Image 1 (cartoon, rainbow, N blue to C red):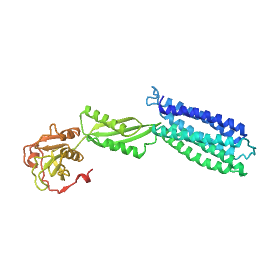
Image 2 (image 1 turned 90 degrees about the vertical axis):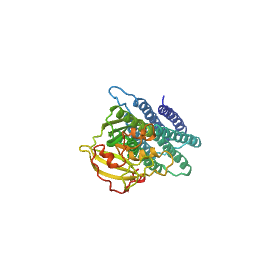
Image 3 (image 1 turned 180 degrees about the vertical axis):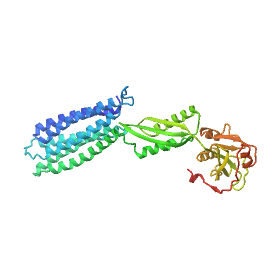
Image 4 (image 1 turned 60 degrees about the vertical axis):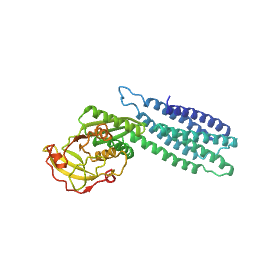
Length: 408
C-alpha cells in the first residue's frame, strides 16, 4: 500500500473515531449541535472512503483506459468539494435553529471537543503535507474537508463556553465557518474542474520544460509545447526540430530530454517528444581568428581572441552573412576549449574549421553531441580556407560583437 493510500485509510479510521466521540458526548450533554456534528463526521467517513478507493483506482490502467484512471482523483476531489459546501449548509442550519437546550456535563463535553479539535488539526496538517508531497488532489481535498471539522467543532466549543455568560454566538460562528468553507471548497472545486477539462499546466512548469528541452544542443527549435494534469500526474508533449538526420541519435536525444524532464519536474507520468530533422537552408561556419581586423586563422582554438561566423547559403554555396565574435574565455586557465565550444554552440554553428584536430579532446565531445562537424585546414587565411571548400567568400568587415554575457 502506497503512502497516500495509507493516509486515506487513516482518515477513514479517524472519522469513525470522531463520530463515536461526538455521538457519545452529544448524548451525555444533550447538545443538538454536537449531535449534528457527529453525523457530519459520519458523512466524512463516506467521503474519506471515496478518496481511499479513488487513490487505488486512479493508478490502474486497462485496455479501455490505457493512460490510466488518474482523473478519478480529480473527480473525487470535485465530489469532496461539494461535500464541503454541504457541510457548510449543515452547520449554518444547525447553528441558526435557535432551539434552547439545557446542556449537561458541560466541562466534560468541552474536554471532548478540545480533543476532537486536536485530532482534526493534527490529521489535516499531516494529510495536507503528504498530499502535497505526492501531488494528490483528492488527498489534499480530503485533508481540507476534515479540517472543516475543526472549525465546526470550534463553533460547538464557542457555543458551550458562551452558555456560561448567557451570550448566544451561534449565528456569528456560523457565518465565519461558512466563509472558510466557501473559500476552501471553491478552490478545490475549481482546481478539480480545470483538470477534468484538460486545462494547460501552469506557466512555471511549462517554462522549466522549455528550458530543459532547449538545453539539448541539437534542439534547433520547439514548434509546439503543451502539458496537462491528470490526477496527481503531469503529461507533457513537445514537437521539436533536431539538428540531425540520424534516427538513432534523434531517438537517443528524445529519450534524454524525457529523462531530464522527469528528473527536474515532479510527478511527470509521460513525456511525448515528436521530432523531425531540421530542413536547413543555410550552414554557419565558425573559424578561429588571430585578431578582429585580419583574416588569419589562429592555430590555437581555445586561445583564439576572435571567431568568424560565416553563414553560407546551401543551394549555391555563397556567403550571405558574416560577423566576428570575441572569445570571452581567453583569460581562463583551464577548460577553455570546452567553454569556447559550448559558447559557439549557442550560435547554432554547423561546422568548425580549425588547424588542429579535436580528436579525444573536450571540444570534440561538445561539438559531436551538437552534431557540429570539424573540418581541418592547412590554409593561413579565412578566404583561402573557404575557397578550398568551394564557398564564394566575401571579406569580413564587421566589428567584434556578442560576448558570452549578451548571448547566454
